[in-house]
Image 1 (cartoon, rainbow, N blue to C red):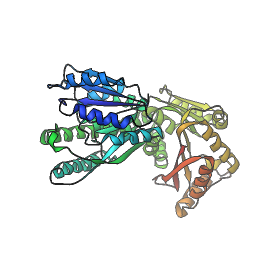
Image 2 (cartoon, rainbow, N blue to C red):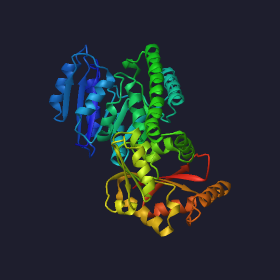
Image 3 (cartoon, rainbow, N blue to C red):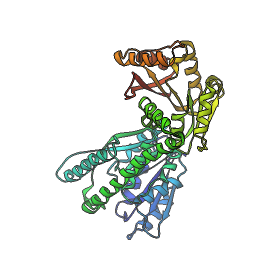
Image 4 (tube, one colour):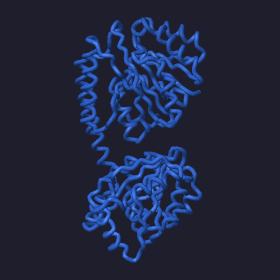
Length: 443
């Protein structure tokens, strides 16, 4: 089964048959196999009777009835859990977003996107101007409150990689309209690939709306403030377990503070997958490995380093984390045996090995990653003028016996692309040094 389309219903008798016929007319001419999951949320009109008639006409339709109203969000979540398709999502039955966009959203997910949603484009007129204004105002408030750059969280047409979205559903608290915001926020925080596809939004004014502007605006505002607090607490809580496990005294706290000025821990942690096996090459005393393991219990983190003293210190410091192990070994030995890594981290390590070894390690990392796996490299850019000299000076003092092998941003990017990675680079935003983050996706 390719696609499961969840249709949440509440008092939809007047439009149900027409809307279902439009959805099936579109889906029947595509290459996708699909199922319709109709869920009635305790309607008070003839919706149930009409839905029972519809499922008799469609072999691929299922129908479920709630005795008590559970809320639109809870209804959609139930449908996704029931679904059999690799892709699961929903569309509001008023079809303000036309079902012609469903195959496009499904195509996006088949090509590696985790969440594909309709970004509503309004045709402005006096009837929908107020609704457009409310929507834009909420989007501005959402971005200011959460810092998350999504454009349209409330759209009534969303499709997901079902396997990936299922763990997210258990995090969501709201059962009504704010469910849409929560599912998008938690998907974003798990570093899912999200694409908001521009779609024409045609409001059917004759159908009215179940959204009560004043009441629901207040509910959304207070729910948004609660979510904002939850996001901030989550960021703190995800870091503090690692902080407590590492810091055993005053000097260790100073060391950790200075180290975190060099390693943008939170930024790097957000880039890495939230689940799966992650290999941290050149882990040292395990600060970032510990952070990755402490901030997600479904990550299995392996820290690797050749220095036995550092590995011993890391093992002692982070012994309380069950999803974290440290190994004293050459990373090439581990990478040559791996094929299903979700992520690889190489932070401030590559410039300590020669150019041939650098390329060998990166090619092995490419082979060890699963499809769409992420490799994160933090490295010095030798063309970054003054900041490069400060990095070089610190390396000369700390590693005065070693030869250092620097590359420029352009050289790193070219090498990684030649190996087969899709590469995005961004400044590491650290206080010291000329470091750059290279976010590498296995194509």
